[in-house]
Length: 81
Image (tube, rainbow, N blue to C red; front, side, top):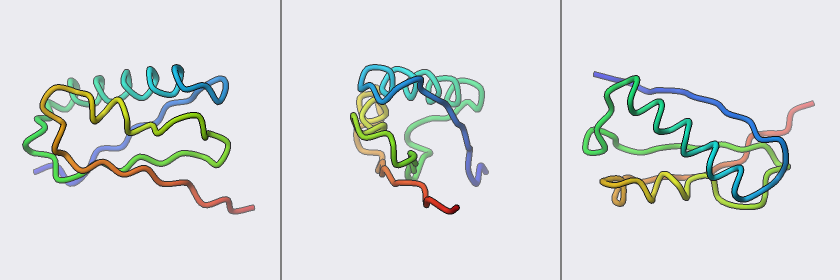
């Protein structure tokens, strides 16, 4: 049983293409390294900092073959001083 997998990536600017591509690369690497099958995933949570507003980072996950019906939710990290 896998309780959860965590990954993180960065972007150099608030750019839709860069957010999507970096998210896609991260998720594909996590899938490969952990031998994850979409049918075994109950949901995916994606968080971003408040400066990233160009696109939904969940978008490339929803576009992966077999991942159409996996619930994916984007959330914003809490800005704690």
